[in-house]
Length: 144
Image (spheres, rainbow, N blue to C red):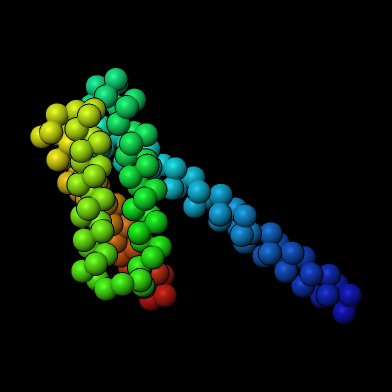
């Protein structure tokens, strides 16, 4: 009887551990989610700026370089004061606006950063909505 209970406990533990996603699965899911969001951002910005295929082919490498440099600024959040960081961001945006103007009209180049900010807002709102729905589901689940 003891052996049977022990075997049953081991099987349940093994099944429970097997059902838990491991770190690499979560990492893969996060990576896939990030790729999906990046693809949606590309589609959103391409549509907002009304880029034709030739413009898009020239625009995206410049935008990706801009994004890479912006991430570099974000990593150094704690250096200098807040106004200095804002000035660096503004200077970088001005520089890249000039680069974008080589690909498209000045008017559309000015819209790049607005489209980027709008997309970030959409993603943030969607995340908050989903988090709220998840929290409501968890509360209902505990209530029953």
